Length: 355
Length: 238
Image (cartoon, rainbow over all chains, first blue to last red; front, side, top):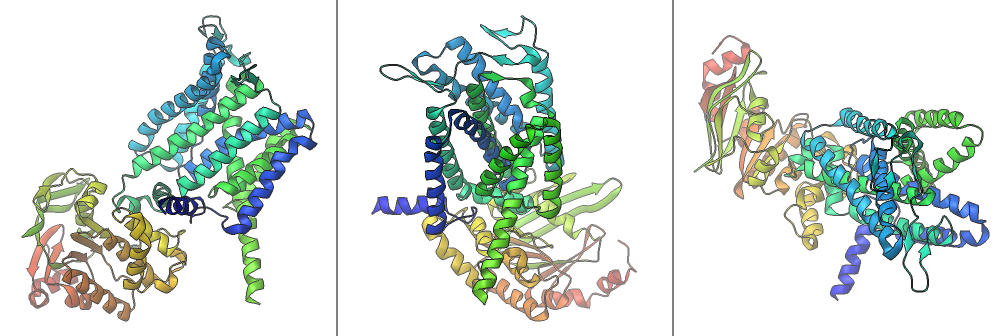
C-alpha cells in the first residue's frame, strides 16, 4: 500500500504542472524515441555514433541552463565557466591519478563536485548580494571570460599541477578517457558503443530527475520566483536559497558536460569558456524553449546538428546563422520555437475538437 | 492585546521625510483602515512593516517581538501576510498552482489538494482553477492574491488598496470576506481610499498626513472631523 502511494507520488512529480508532456501518448512517444536512440548504433557507423555522443555531451549543460534561466528566471551567461572548470579538473586529476581502479570515475565525481563548489561560492555572492536581471548575466559572463583569459596564459612549464601541464591557449590533452574497472579487463569508454549507451542512460536519468525536481515543492517556488520574486518572498520563502540551489544544480550539470566532453575528446581548451562558447548555450536553450525541459532537449539537439552541418561550410558563417536564429526566435517565438510549435498544434487540436 | 506597534518610526528619502515619528498601535482582532491623501506615506509605512524598506530610526514590534531588523520572509513566517496594491500573482501559472505555492508551506502533501479546493471555493474561483492567473478578471486577480495572503493563515493581514479597480458588488463581497476572516481571529490593517468600503469594514481608522498620524478614531469620528476633510482639499499642513 505504502509502495503504491510512493509510486503514485513519483509519477505525479514526473508529469506535474511544470513540465510539458503527460499521459500515455507522451510516454509512448518517449519510449519510441528512446528505443530508436538505443537501436541507432546498429545502423550507424562508428564515427556517427561517436559524433552523437558529442551532441549528447552538451545536453546536460542545456538542461542545467533551462533550470536556472527557464524555470528560475536568472539568466546565467557563464555556464561554460563550470564546463571549463570541471573539464580542466578532470584532466588534472586523471593525468595525475591514472585510469586504474576506477579512478577516472572518481575524478568525474570530484570534478563535477568542484564545479558545484565553485558555483556555490559564486552563487552565494550573486544571489545573497541581490544581483538580478541583466547584471547577473554580465557578472557570470565576466567570470567565464576571466577564466578563459587566465587559462590562456598558462603556457609556460611553471603552469603545471603535478604532472599535468595546463598548456595555455593550446589546451590540455592526453588525459585518459573514462574507464570502468571490469573483471577480465577494464572497459575504456572511447567515443563508441559503450560510451554512447552510458551517456544516453545518464541523459535519461538526469532528464527524469530534473522533471521530478521542477514539479516538486522546490520547483514550485522556483517558477514562483521567475514569475514574481517579491510575491514569492512575501509568501515566506527565502528566495535567495532557492535561486542558489538551482544555480548549483544547473552549474553541476554544466560541469558534467565539461567532464564528458573532455573525456570524449581527451582534450580541453580555454576557448571552451570564451565568448562564443558562452553564447551558444543561450541560443540552444532560447531556440528550443527554455521554460520546459523537453523543448530544451529537442531544441538543443536540433540546433547542435544544424550548427555542425553549417560548420562544414565555415564556422564563422555558422555563428552568424546562430545569431540570426536567436534574433528571429526572440522576435517571432519568444518562448522558443519548439514551444511555439507545441502551442500552435494545441490550438489547432482544440479548434478541431470545438468543431 | 497589541499585535503591532511602531515606535517613533522614521524614514526619509534624501531630504524628503516620508514618515516622521509614527507611533501606531494595532490591537489583536481589530479591522483597521489607514487613510490619507496621496503622498501621505501610507505605502511607505506598509513597506516598513514588511521590511521592504529599513527605517532610519524607530522600532517595529510584532506580538511584542522586535522585528525592526528582520528580513521580509522572516516577518511573513512570524505571521504577517500582505496583499499588494497591484495584484502580485504568478501570471503564467494556473490559479490552482498559485494557491498551491502559497499553501505548500504549511500544508502536508496529502492534504494539499483538499485545502486548495476549499480555498478556491471560498474565493469563488473553483470554476477557473485551471485558468492561467494572468487571464482572470481584475477583481478575480485581487481575490486570488487575497487568497494567497490568507493561505498562510496569518495573524495580521496587510491589504494595500484591496478593492482598487473592483466593481461595487465585488468591493462589497470583499468586505464580507474580510468580516468572515476577522471573525475567525485575523487582524486586518488596510490602506483604502473607498470610504464606503472603509465604513463597511473598519473598527478604527487612522489618518496619515505628510508622514505623521493626523487623526485616529471610529469612522464616524473621522468623517465628522473638519480638519480631515480639509487635508483632502489641501488646506491643512501639519
